[in-house]
Amino acid sequence: MNWKNKNVLITGISGFIGSNLAKKLVELKANVIGITRTNHKHSLLFFEGINKKIKLVNVGLNDLNSLIGVLGENRIDCVFHLAAQVEVGIGMTNPYLTFESNTRATYTLLEAIRLCGHNVESVVMASTDKSYGEYPSNEMPYKENFPLLAKYPYDVSKACADMIAQSFANEIFKLPIVITRFSNIYGPGQLNFSALIPDLIRSSLGYADFEPRGDGKQKRDYLFIDDVINLYILISESLFDNKEELSGQIFNAGTETPVSVREVFDLVHSKIPFSDYEQIVKKMEKRHAMGEISVQFMSHQKVKEYFSWTPTIDLNSGLNLSIEWYKKYLKQGQK
Image (cartoon, rainbow, N blue to C red; front, side, top):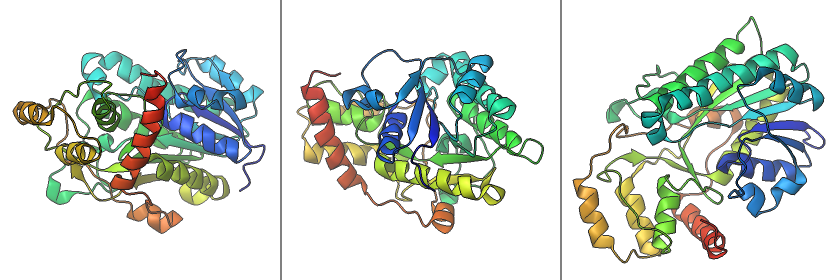
């Protein structure tokens, strides 16, 4: 598939993944249309001037008529649905916002595509490993055929959106949809400092104090942003050309190498030492994280089988690349 002059819609384009995806698609000569409700400029999209090379549209994802207008006016070929309320903690304090942002917005967008998206050839939906809920560590990694056991608001909101997407991809509506569930994504442009890795890097560089939210024993799988963007592009291209086989499918991706929060903390410390390392460790040992799944990591065997994809950037290399980017970003007074 040639991306040149393809009309691509990205929801959540000012976010971490959306900005990086827009950057790549611009390089591939696609016409990128981004939906955003965010007015602040603290985004890779603006920091690297990507916004000047794309078209931004300010509409709500719960506004069906506006979405129909965007799809029709721009004759959208491909959709990447990345917009979401992504913070687990906000899900605990504001479940209504979380369900509105993650569940209602999904069925509204898909209904708009059903009603007027006659040109749309691929829809790639970003879900999460948290849709699976908690499984015993001896049953891990998560595989695509695992039943969804989501329990907490954020997790449930994404699991519901996944099931809704599959209902739009069924034999009745036949929308060309693939659902992606990736492990924790990190790298340049991630400005949600409630996420572990950007929080650690910012703190190690002296721009904040790191406050542990748990005892450091939770294990996660970390996937570098460049690997994610390459896989999104690959999935969309494949879906565009092979709807019959791929529509309605779910694909996991991760490194299959989970590490604990404490291990990530120590790895960042080995690169940029924390001046208060011992105090942080003592705090960490006394904390218990509420609403957090203890072990999460993904199998990538299915994406390897279908797309010959495996991650190329390990955590050590990814952290080095991330640290260099944050040094530049934070030095310019961005926080």
